[in-house]
Length: 400
Image (cartoon, rainbow, N blue to C red; front, side, top):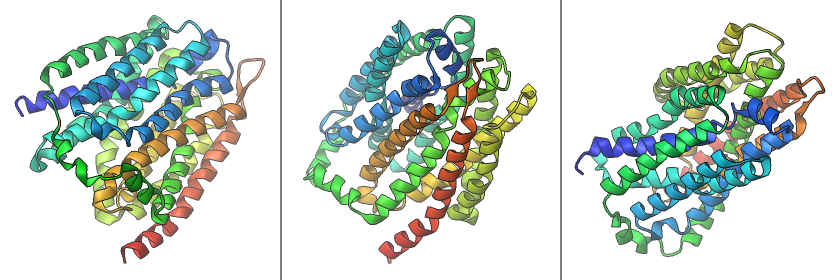
C-alpha cells in the first residue's frame, strides 16, 4: 500500500479519538456532578452507559461486520460515533447526555475491531507486528496527551469543549480516511469458511476454558473500573486537590505506563506471564486500599500514589491479556477476542454502576463509602488471582 505509514497513523488517530472519548468522562466527574447536580450513582450511570452499550454492540457486530466492505464499515461506524460525540457536546441535560453516551458507545465499541481487522487485511505478515504497534500507541497517547488536554479545555472553557475538540479532529480524520482508504473486500473470499457465524460463536462460548477465561477477565476489569471513575471526584471532594491539577494525574500516569508496558511485556516473556501477573496482582491491592482511604494530602503524594496505581494495574493487564489470548485455537481467536473485548467493556460498565450505588455524597460535598468500593475492588483482584491456577490447569488439560 502506498503511504503505508500515513495510512497507519490515520487509523491510530481514529483510535485516539475513540479512546479519548471514553476516557475523558471519568475525570470530568467533578464538573458534571456539580453542574448537573447529580450524585455518584447518576454519574456512574453516565460512565457505564458507554461501556455497556459498547459491549452489547461489539457482540452484535461479530455476526454482521464481516459481510460489509471494511471501508464502508469503518466510515459508517466512525460517522455514527462522531454524531454521538457531537450530541454529547450539545447535551443540555443529564438525561440527554446519558442518551448520547449510549449512542456513542454503540458505534465506538465496534471501531477497534474494524481497525485491527483492516490492519490484518492490508499489511503483509512481515510488517504486521510493527503496524499493530503504531496503531496501539493510540491508547498511550490518549492517556498522556488527550485526557490532560481535554481536562485543560474543560477547566478553561466548559465540560462541552473536549467533545467539540474530538468532533473537529474526528471530522478531519474521517475526510482523510474517506480519501486514502481503498475498497476492502478481500475477506469476502474467505467468507465461505465461516458457514455459520452463530455456530462459531457458540463453539467458543461453550468451551469451559473460554468461560473460565472470561470470568477471569471480568473480575480483573471489575476490580479496576469500580475504582477509576471516582478517582477525580474523590481527589477533589475529599483530598482537596484543585480541579486544575487533575490533568497531571492522567499525564504522569499515562507517561509512566508508556515506559512500563514494554518492560512488563519483555519481563513476562522472559520469566513467564503467570508469575508477572501474580506479582502485580498482589501489589495492586496496596494502592487501591490506600487511595480509597486517602485523607487530605499534598499534590505530590497524590501524583506518586496515582502513578503507582496506573503502573501496577497496567502491569497486571499486560500479562492477563496475553494469557487470555492463548485459551483458544488460532482459527477461533478472532471470535474469542471480540467476545472477550465486549465482556470486558460490559464488566467495566457494571462495575462503575455498582460503585456509583455504593458511593454517596454527604451534605458537605464529600464522597462517602469509597473505602467500601476499594475493599470490593481488592476482593475482586484477589478472586482473579485465585482463578489463575484453575485457568492454567484447565487450559493445559484442554491442550493435552
